[in-house]
Amino acid sequence: MSPVFENFGAFVDGFLTSLSIILWALVGSLVLGIVIAACRVSPIPPLRAFGTFWVTTFRNTPLTVVLFFCAFGLPEIGINNSFFFFGVLGLVLYTSAFVCEAVRSGINSVPAGQAEAARSVGLNFTQGLRYVVLPQALRTVVPPLGSVVIAMFKNSAVVGAFGVGGELWGTGLTLTSARGFETLPIFTGVAIGYLCITLPAGALLQVLERKVAIAR
Amino acid sequence: MTFRRTALVATLSVVALTAAACGGGDEETATDVPVAEAPEFEAGTTMAELAEAGSMTVGTKYDQPFFGLEGLGGELEGFDVEIAKIIAAELGIAPEDIDWEETPSSVREEVIEGGEVDMVVATYTINAERAERITFAGPYYEAGQQIMVLSENDEITGPEYFTENPDATICSVRGSTPSEQIRPYLANEGQLTLFDEYSQCADSLSTGQVDAVTTDNVILLGFVSESDGEFKLVGEQFTEEPYGIGIEKGDVEFCQFINETLAANEEAYVAAWEATAGQIEGTQTPELPEPNECV
Image (cartoon, rainbow over all chains, first blue to last red; front, top):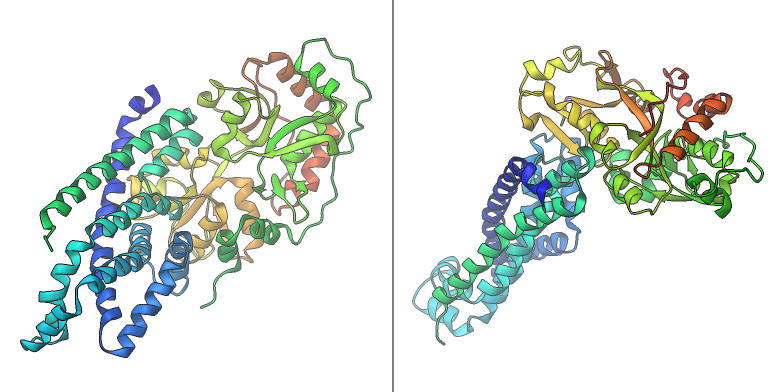
């Protein structure tokens, strides 16, 4: 494992870059995913159609293709931004489709009587969703949402192929090919780096799940 | 939306990329070195083993235009490929008896150490770190790193520009030596964008995502000659990139044999160059460099 310790600084930099990609993408995809889920269950047909279109598009397109269109397609039509931004954008678009479906499954698990009761006390659709349905739905979706989020953490390794500099996976590639360090220890180090993010995240999710669980 | 063909192709599939890049040229194989008949080698040497087997495995790149590029029909062409054929011929191995193995930059040392290939000829820059794990024969070519920019760009004149302008960005390929050698000129890490393919760098240059591309001059010249005047090279070569042939660590006899073979076949060397990388506008036929000592 000595190649890992020799390059510890590079690993720490890569870890921090990956972490910031993950945190931006986490916030973005959760917010966007919930908005899209709200669209999909909304009573307004164009919004439902939009939600369905969104999920169909991004859930069925490989992540690399989404990232490719962000990193190479957008500049082609005159939209220039940093590759970091494009990388996070691609992750958010892709992950939002999965977040949406997980959240929607939670919404569907809330008995219809809850929404009807909300309506009968005078809440409109948005209020009913916001104050009655979503708070119950989000509790039940912690486990599937957790899987989506952890998958996104690992997917973040892919943005390294689209110009985002210095993230963990890319750091591993740079160390092994240009600087000639041995592959096995370096990528073991990379794997440990990702575990340092995903294992605590998994533990956190478990705590969260226990905390928000409701007896039915 | 119209996407540049190269950009789309690059991601769609490697096969398609190869097709686009070499659809134009149908170069016949350049190596006319006669295949040695039953050559004699001292028993126990790598040469004797290979000559006995009558075939060898050579690692090269499949995606490097003019050096090692896989054609539509799966045939390989390029300067590295021709160099390998010259060496194989001297061992009594005909070109069709060579087993090719794709060796991108990141796996070259691994496949040599693991014994999966007998040698690697893959735009393989000789450097001290790599030489700790494998032995280099050669060099057989000396490339140098340069900078490519958009033709209308008059500001960038050399690598020093990036030290003085911390906002300027430059692109190269991850894991390549040029991507490391540009680092001392950079004011910060964020200036360097890394991709897997140079075509992606070229696309990002033309869409304005990066300000320059840097790598070995021969590779850049290939892009300049295909760009219809969109790109140009600026400044002098600021590094030396001697390309070597990677073999198993410590195989001094095989290394010396390769060096002698190259020296004895200078005509074939020139022919190999002219049929491949020599096709690029602006390149000059190189002279075979003095070989390094085999260690």
